[in-house]
Image (cartoon, rainbow, N blue to C red; front, side, top):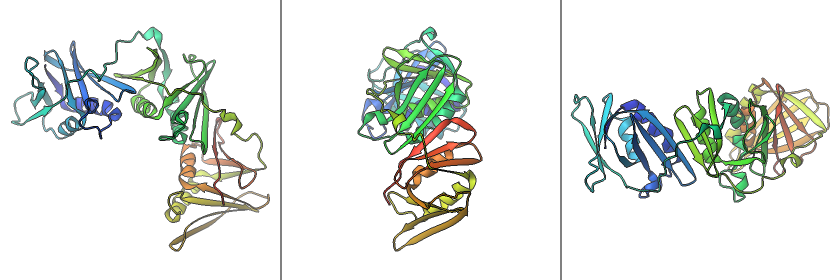
Length: 372
């Protein structure tokens, strides 16, 4: 195998795929990146057996072949190369897995030798028939993921919480994330109906890679391939397993009626929350909201160390209600609102609190209060 690539372009390709690699498995074949020559391109792939990712970049091919190299070391090398084009060479006729990296133009007398681990575990995503996929606008989907992904779980034992639930209804798509203590839901209309009528649960790692893949792109494609979900945009492709199981009936969690509604300036609330988190006690970082006539008191404390109090004038004429929140939950939902204001709807200290974006009627978030 022998090919020449632009150094920075190859680094971008490495960075596009290395996010799926579990770096702690340094001696595993799955810590390696697969490089495969195809016509005048080099395809770069990686997988953790649950999600596979592939991208391709132009290359000047001297000799075809396949090579597997450790992602972390390869990334570090290309981050620090001081020449424009790199020549990668591996003698495929020998038993050695050593690849040599040098300056393709011969101006810089530097070489790296790096050993990989040949493996059939790193599967290359096959050629895809686009007729099995549908196209959708990236900006809309990225926006939906941004406003819901913070609410999904990452290590929850109830596996259905470890991803986002996507459910089509005609051309409308509903995206929901929850970890059992908070929930976020959004609905948007798309040009085409998505090819999973009963809904799918996309794991959090795939959501992260899809967000990265769609960055700066206008459109992407999605569809089922070999009982897995395939997504692509630009020169990046993903193929991943879905989370099996039944997503909970989230509509039951969303309050349909609340006794009180308060409208707050979002930027002010963000500032008060940042201040309150400084003195909030770990690990819950509890922040308390106390609503009283025309006033909101925001407070937090770390017993014996720090205490925070802020009183803000608001339009409120109900009875006094104190609600305790996990501080990070509050910060996440406030960041997800795009309007200059945010609406809070609540009834009692222990009932779910509804957060709304005044300019987005198809978005809603719910947080379960902490015990006072």
